[in-house]
Image 1 (cartoon, rainbow, N blue to C red):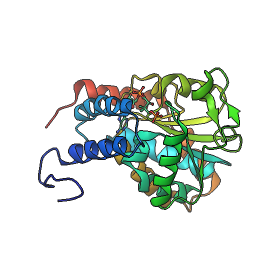
Image 2: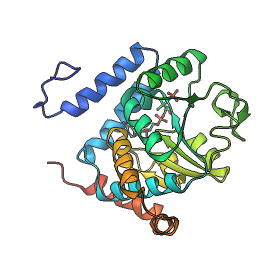
Image 3: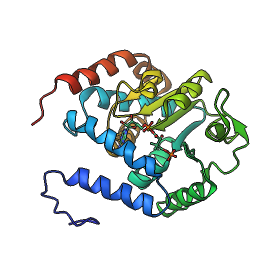
Length: 249
Ligand code: PTJ
């Protein structure tokens, strides 16, 4: 047994554990109620993927790690679902890639920003951005546009897990390298990403960290070669093929 009253032998153990974390996130004021709906939608796609990291997602996670290691100013954007599902794992990814963490919410409230930052600190984060909100992403309405001038606004590479399509598009237009983690390969966020990762955030984030650790000793040219070899459309097509035609065991 773990922090949830379900035996690890249960066939849907991981999925039930994930649900429990999201529920707890809502109870703690970290996750929005819409986050529950988003999780349900994600689960349907994950089920069709066989609840596993498919090869094309693993390759995209390696490319994402290479981008983060090459970046001048990488930032990981944290919303209510990410904070509830992978708080310690996202802090580890930030450490492995020298990235900053910035809380950036679709349904932005000061209380949730504070609660998420506190939760991340409890999981080892040193600095959490997102409080200054002294710049705007151009082309978005007021609350959703707010970012830190020395955080996401200035970043050259940004990881946006479970992002809203509008904002993903607006961030892309700022010429940033945008790494999106989204189980739906047809979502606008995945479609506009420089690197779409069609995988569950609970598997994707630790796997990106593992790749970053493996790639740590690569030189600039080797990392560049990994990044240049990637084709986002091919990765999206592979994921869609798996979802539409894959076998469910
Ligand atoms: O905390 P906030 O206020 O920033 O709000 C965050 C949510 C996620 C509620 C907000 O951004 C939202 O409403 O997102 P959407 O438009 O529902 O999109 C969420 C996308 O993430 C969908 O395409 C889901 O399939 C996907 N998704 C859900 N759970 C996971 C996921 N992708 C990866 N891993 C998951 N666990």
